[in-house]
Length: 107
Length: 123
Image 1 (spheres, each protein chain N blue to C red):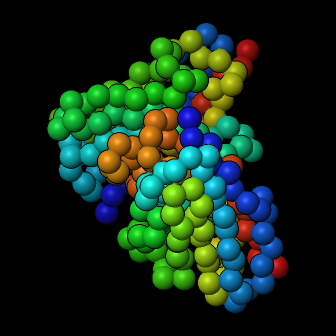
Image 2 (spheres, chains in turn cyan, red):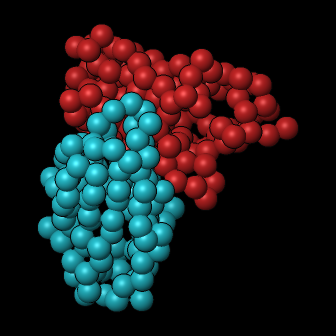
């Protein structure tokens, strides 16, 4: 099983600043890495797939990067509605696994 | 617009069964894999099960924690997926999300999430 580790657990950022979230895989997942956003009391939604491809309707301030085992989600010009928990997920192999999440708080 | 609606949750006793239906619209159901992801109270996301579309034989995958207890199925004529949950345990207590699976080479990522249905297993 590929273990996904996210850091930090919590990130506190001021509006207008950038947030950088990390996700590490215990073995290579090639380009099969997705990111999800879960706002409070909401279902998750897909942000990014294939490391860096934005899902339909996702603003350009969300960007993904990385390769192999190290990945980053960057949220630029943070807005109040970006307050959420963000999860990475590998779909390289079975079982599909998620990271434990990073909670982004707006100062 | 992709619409996914999960339902069927409730309070059940340990050892009992429950079936969760997932109704969909806005896309060609038969062309897509469908999956279930759950979230225990205050915890993160856990993939539960996936069923491929008929092009891939409608084959299924399960997390080890539910294998041999849960069964995923689909009715392409009705655009509905199901999760049959048997021998339920307290640790199955979670919000269950039905999702549309989008393929990579082997695995799938999840786009199109239902709002979730709550399953509570308690005596």
